[in-house]
Image (cartoon, one colour):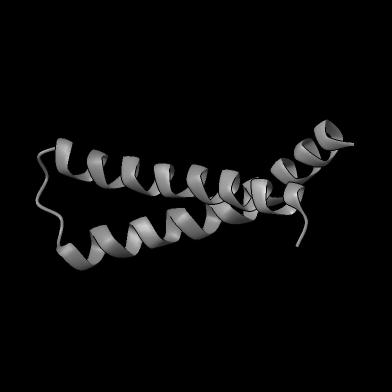
Amino acid sequence: MNNSTRVSAWIYTGISLAAAFLFLLATYATGISYPAVARIGGAVWVFILSMIITMPVVISHVNKRHA
């Protein structure tokens, strides 16, 4: 695995974790009593979708910068 691949993986994983964490914060901040399963399931769903969306974008951006 080369350096640009590692950098890309760290970046899009970090973005996805941040999105999932913000989702969890939003569920607690609304004051509505959501079950824990719904909160955790929603955070996992946001994480997976964020990975799918950010992976190709970040990889192409990092490859252009390292080329």
